[in-house]
Amino acid sequence: MWDELWQSSSVALPTLQAELVAQWIDKFAFDSQVHIMAVRQGDSFVAALPLAGRKEKKVFSVGDLSTNCWSSNGELLIDRNADHRVVLDFLSEAVDTVPWPLIWLDFVQTGELHWKSMIDSLKSRGLSFAIHERYHIGQVRTIGSYTNYMSGRSKNHRRNLRKDYRRLEKTGPLNVMIHSEFANDEVDVLVREAFELENRGWKGAAGSSVLRSSGMLDFYILLARYLASNGQLRLAFLKHNDKPIAFELGWEAKGWHFSYKVGYDADYRTFAPGQLLRMKLIEDCFARTDCDFFDFQGPMNHALSCWSTQTYPISRLIVAPNRRISRTLLNGYKAFWPMIHRIKCQPCH
Image (tube, rainbow, N blue to C red; front, side, top):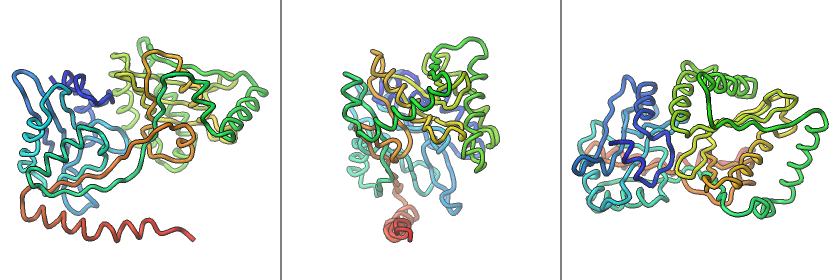
């Protein structure tokens, strides 16, 4: 029922399928309270919201989506054909049943219709909440002409890409390998190869790479196996002299390509290999009939803004159940957040 709901929802991210939500919970919330709010009509789910407990600032417990910086496996799912007002009234009513004083959601696409409808439902029930925009994520609409799209990028960006590509080609063959079909244990081998490449970059030096984080390689291999079995995994490498120098681990579903994990060999940083690979992958999406959007997944920065044709906001949504302690905590957040935000945003000198 869960996967049928995901399929009938407007949300395309394939890591929201039931087995992968369960995998996230097993990895990141195995010792936490988990609260799945779902609305059923007949034998089908028409809405669902998976929540897992965590500590906010190591101070008090909150319920959050089954999502973190490692993997996005939690979202509000609503059947497109369902009566959103009725369905979300049931979910809003269920807020009072959660075991935490606050529902604290750090990764909410508040610009999407299903979240706008949810916020309207919270208002109609008189529930207190706070919304603060955190960052934007870039996208490319990959319908039409790739040539026209590139002509809309800055001259400096296009010139740098051509220059870096020619410089690399002068020292050896340069080619892109895109894997979308996998045989036997090929997924395991390629995923490991990708993260070995990541480990040779700045993340490895900082100790934050997948290979230097306990259990994370196994987590991504299991995730990739499942997506590959559904034709939803796309793993690409940029190779120079047959040596991988950049990779992208991407998920695909419903006409969307999600650029989830990227990395490159630090020895090649002056050639911007990640940008060269990104150029080839966007070109590939324009050439296909089953790819309408290229989503960068991470916060907007200069390296992504030069590609993006549109963006969407990621916000924090904090909801207080109808309890005195919950309203007190939320009011405290509202009072102190502007001051904390101003301190964080002070320019460096």
